[in-house]
Image (cartoon, rainbow, N blue to C red; front, side, top):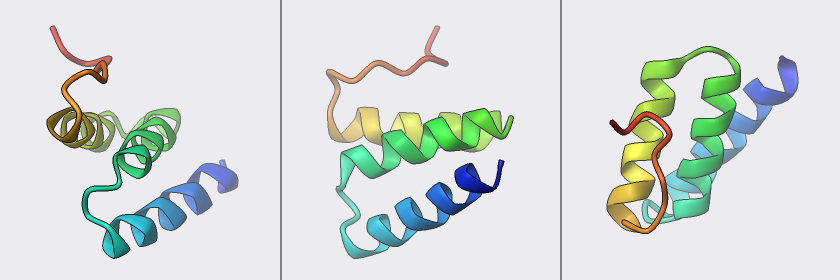
Length: 61
């Protein structure tokens, strides 16, 4: 669990440096999902999808 929390922190820092870093949004979303933060995960997946519509959002209907 601690690794996911560290990953979220690291990806958040990366996003602060580059707000269009798609990989960081996607991977942070995965870490949030693993911690059962489904709303936060969905938000990150949506942002990644906005930046690259070819990415799949697992929460999308």
